[in-house]
Amino acid sequence: MPENPELQTFKQTLKMRRNYVGKSCKLHYEVSPLKIVRASRQYMYDDSGNEYLDCINNVSHVGHCHPHVVTAGQEQMTKLNTCYGFLSDCQVAYAKRIVELLPEQLCVCYFLNSGSEANDLAIRLARAYTKQNDVIVIDNAYHGNTENLISISPKKLKEHNLPIENWVHVVPTPDVYRGKYREDNINPGQLYANEVKLAIAKAMANGRKIAAFISEPNQTQAGMIFPPKNFLPLVYRYVREAGGLCIADEIQTGLGRCGEHYWAFQSHDVVPDIVTLGKSLGNGHPISILVTTKEISDSLNEFSSSYGGNPVACAMGMAVLDVIQNEHMLSSAKSVGKCLMDELRRILPNHRLMGDVRGMGMMVGVEIVQDKESRKPNKDAAEALVYKMKERKFMMANEGPDKNVIIFQPPMCFTCENALTVAKALDQALAEVEEDDLRVNSGSNLNIQVPLSVLTNAKHKLDSDDDEDDFESPGKRQKISYEEVD
Image (tube, rainbow, N blue to C red; front, side):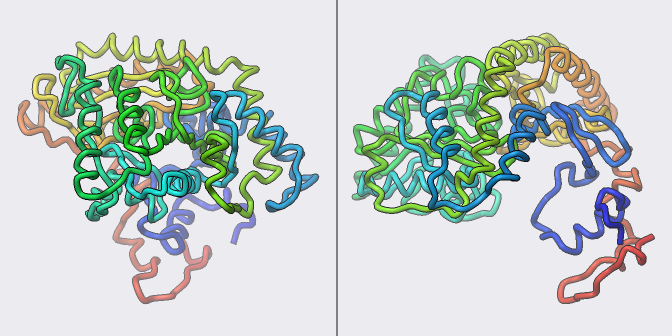
């Protein structure tokens, strides 16, 4: 067996994964996966040395393997990395820097290891403070993978065909492009907020009380949904009048990604009671933070997280803040995001399957539709487009409840040159998808599939008849060795 995992062939790595990693753990580009062996800034490299422009990896917030962040982690690891229970200069200094970036009343930090942990604690804090139980969530939202969080993640409930618990109240997604109230309605923000008011009234009529409303200020996995004006201010008011708290899930939207401010909620002129942060804080290193008021914090008698806020995580978190400030990443997100949206909107009239372009800073979505008039979602075309972009060496993803929204959430070091390059490639790839549609379907009942060149690429094909005997089947424990792999 090779000592260096990078020396394994693609086929060997794929077989080992199929033997030892859960089948439900899906790969990006499931039909034609990539073996990525290194990354730098906004680029990733596969085992054949191909360079890909990463348009989706928001976890590597300031860029893959940023040298300042890597060095901070390495240096701290040579000194100390330990669990909670000890005074730490690094932790308190980091907490102070985070608090200084937030509104004054948000002044108490809890350190954890993942966004799911932070959101789980947010619900626990809300219930402890309000002495109430129920939670209001936005349809198609995703807030984490613990049992409690799956219960308040309509995206996951639908995927797994799970029932909605009686303590969860789902309100419509404030989508003005394909939602219940659209851009041609008068004051859609008020109309969507009224749905929250109605949900509160129905809950109270049934003898239930609201502990919290939780939402991303801008919804990401719901398909890059940017709520209309007045929606969040009105919702926050209605929830607080009902005795509940307002939780801002900034796990994917925070730390300057939206361009104007450090936090997306600031773009909506609201101040939450609890803010949860994750993923991007450590540029990929496991860390998350919950920030709340002193009054809410004091309602919880005891809390501990074994490695939450460990010295290495805090050192890397401090380094990320350094990079954001020193490399002017807020202003860059604003200007580069505008450059990307301008280019995408420029090509919008040229494509009948391109329905909408929307965004804020380094969060941009392109809605792929069957036609501009009906606005019906087009998952097949979106998926084909993602694979065609992969062939052009651009990493993309399609999200949203109908998997028809191409999303852009790149590392914050993305440049205007990158934006121009990816928009040009998208223009060409989408033209090919539209040509395939006309040729195969004569313009009706679109049924585009993943490109044939992908499916016939033997190296990257997940399933092949000659490989079947090399894998364990349920109930078998036959192991393979590298010597047995062709």
